[in-house]
Length: 437
Image (tube, one colour):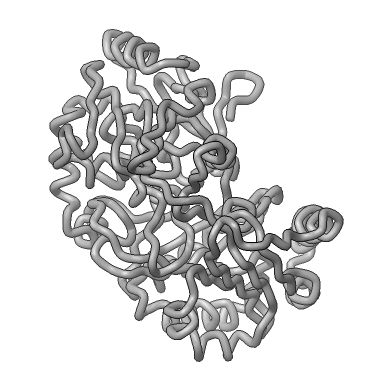
């Protein structure tokens, strides 16, 4: 997002830059003109969506392309349930666009403010071991490459590039549209409740295998897990949504206003964190409802934070989680934000954190005014020891020398990058770190 003085900063306030130029293309042709003009001036180009990545993946020191106006529905193939969306379309806009066709995204994450191009480019995911991340739903992308050409990658054209382009880190070109394989609209039966953390960990394998979508949060300094269990039902199943006033109390009053107060208090007085976390466990969750899938998947997140998340082989999740528990206890840190644990199916996208393996994700957060370095660095060491791969849009310190060992198709991806962007038109310091120069 841009602010006064022409400085761009991301949502988490962990990255900022003053671009040399900011442009707002509305069409693929406008993106082409911007890329060609930038090349003639010797400037690099980066496109941004909702600025929700915590890493520097979207930092644009040269020309920043703000895709907010490159938004909306391009076409629908009803026979195949394929939907083409312009790159800047926000995830929260998609359900309304799909509703007239009786379609829905197969799975979503718990935040829906991102653009579709940003979500797939960073590996955004939800939870559920029968489902992959959002990029696994992609069957086609259209890119403007470094030479200003339009490259179509789908099941008919340049198909061999799809495993790279569907999750391309913004390194291959500027995405102008995305074609997604959708599913018939469905509803979710949601159960959100506090449970014994020990009980959840003892049953974790069975719970994950038996449930369409399962995740849990742990508030440090407590022995409780906040579990979320979502079961898929047909679109015509009876809906029992949360009462409007009850939803407002849970999501706005407790989830936003009181949580903001709690974070501000623990920032000033860290010793209050254990008591506040114990209170949070009593106030949050413990509800059951049935509603449209998008209404259940997404949660309003208004309290600003910073995040690090690692994908682990699913069999390593419990041991890694318990190591994080022990770390917090031994260091006597006071952590106010919960630790989040989710799960996905393995996939074959070259730069996916779930490439080749069913994965569990452990995410740690800090309030944006708190320095996360000591906590994140120590957790990162645990995650790497258990075979972790960092989320591309969330804070981490790994570089190409380490990441190459963790991604079997790393060199194949870099070879495609070298072919499509030999002069690094779309690079920035973050991509140089994680992919190499």
